[in-house]
Every structure is written in structure tokens, then in C-alpha cells.
Image (tube, rainbow, N blue to C red; front, side):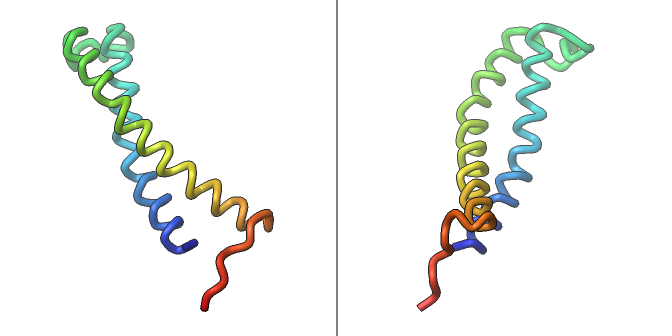
Length: 84
């Protein structure tokens, strides 16, 4: 179980990186701040920004839940499942 959680945390962490960067970039492109307005017009940036909400939420949950489980096991608050 811990091995699976660790792999999931690593994979989702790497997947979160470009999604979060795109989320910030599209947010700044909507308001045309810091030169990000050159990436896309406001309407396109808003469409992409709205599209990124669901993948971002799924990846955050998939990253946080196993991370929390691993932290609770590490702190001794949860016992890892025993092997048969």
C-alpha cells in the first residue's frame, strides 16, 4: 500500500507541475499582467483557465490524500497494513 501511495504521490506531483503553471499563466493572461497577455486573448485564456479547474482538482486530491496517508503512517498515527 505504501509503495503504491508513494508512486502515486510522485506521478501526480510531476503532473501537477505543468497544470499549476498553466493555471497561473492563463490566470495572468486573462488580466494581461506581467506580459502574459501575449500568450492568448482574454477569451481564449479564460476558456483554458476554466478547462484546467477539473484536472487541477483531480490531481490535487490524488496527490494530497496519499501524501496525508503516508504522513500519518510516518508519524505513527496509522498502522500500515500487515503483510499476510
